[in-house]
Image 1 (cartoon, rainbow, N blue to C red):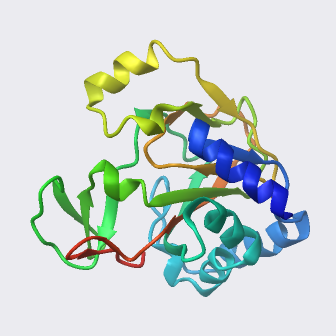
Image 2: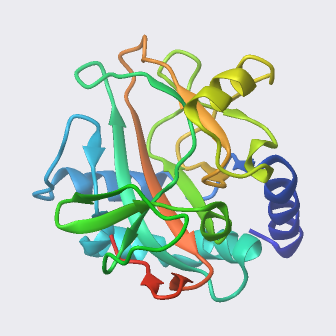
Length: 233
């Protein structure tokens, strides 16, 4: 992307909590990536694959200047990827996601600290729900391997809800009833940029068209709250 588009991205993400870029990677790159992932011995769950930064293809993708540049426009030049996930919604693996914020971060070690928790462990990596000041150091890029359409369970967001901190489940229900949702329709090769604190959801798919998304998270610094350090996942 050109410099004015990076500035536009940073401004929109700051204001609305998300931004959409209809074309970031060409279809040829997406086809090649899809083939490589299909040939990998990935440990898949019902919803997709966690902890993908250990995959060389995904690590290379996360460091691609076209994606890294977007993250840096929001977080600054020190932005780096720390977690990648494949979400794979299809007729055989189809689920709704209720309104929520993404508040859990992977951490190298468990240290009890004010505002952090509850803690859990996923595939050997410690996770804790984080306070707002740590989550404000993070942005996610969702690269679409398929067209995201009205009928295949697209992401929906509640604009500007990222600026008000971490909400309880009850507060999220109240907000979702009063804020107009935006449906994020993105073609193959497009990217949604989003803050983890924006309230978001997705419905079940009603289509035979899959919706596969590589969700890559970037942070502005490794130490999110001393002594807590992000794990690479």
